[in-house]
Length: 435
Image 1 (cartoon, rainbow, N blue to C red):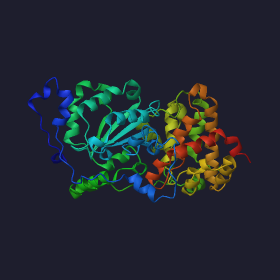
Image 2: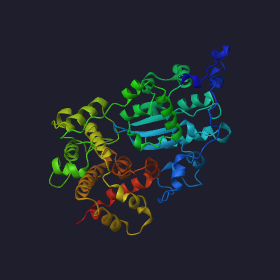
Image 3: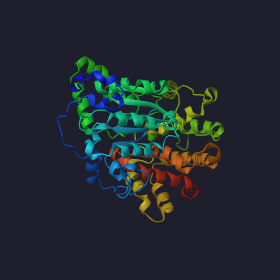
């Protein structure tokens, strides 16, 4: 990888003018392909039967007259559900940045802030795909410096991790240059990811729209590894345990690990604890949990061991486990079959009746689990003055965990409608779930 980056420091790098021109002195080799291909999402949407939402909360599909439209359509910045620890994921793809003269970098910075403003009250993770940053599209060092300074404590407080994927000598050197202005706490949140396979420890890669050029580059550098190293990166997966709870179809759980109504044990266990201990917790579902504890609890459930949240006294841990269980279902709770109907429900009349009829087509265990979950969330909503979780906030948290597309690109283009549908379930739950 280091052969792709040529670092040429000038003698005056330490001078007074260094912050404004140092990035220009870090010379990047041009990429093999100078064309700027259409974005993966744009290609996909042409063949999709699902209409892109007009202005429903998804920044990638803002209306043409929105001040950020020209930035959003590049899909440099994306919001991609939750990571494995219950934190929202923001993705920044350098390869989608057009040449310098075609991009307003100040507006890009404002758009990034605009996107983060929707999530900074919650814990979140930032993933930066570095591959594709070239001498033609790199911003100035002064822009990078201003960008870091522009993000005040509000943004830095709840960012739990910044993952730099496919780091090169350029990015490593850049961070060394910025070390004097990067706070110690923020510095500890920086992590290097050398291969996409390492991301699986952090987030389900299927929910990310990873640019094809990044995937191709990852495959290229993996192929350059020795066979033994490749095998070590992709160890065989262990077969599921007989008591497995996570990643198991609801129909199977109903046969061996759910109650008479078909509600999975993990869902009922976490919800019962949260009903007793969490309804008045400010920011419930917005905070992440200790990474090792999340893994430990998941392993206990999967091995059939008892989990006692009352001993742990951690509301946020139970909340993360609930979201993680939903997210790891092989098929979403609302099922792939209802995906198109959910995404397009905003354009239909008599929505409550329509939704009620839609939900009655779900398998019994899915319907029972959804009803149980929504009724619980309605109780969270009833105490929103204390816990600060109104229906919009809860929809943003749970929408992507209730439904996703079989193609990650479609999920990102439909996050707004999915969240709006979830909000309807919460606001109209009594009518929707009435017998």
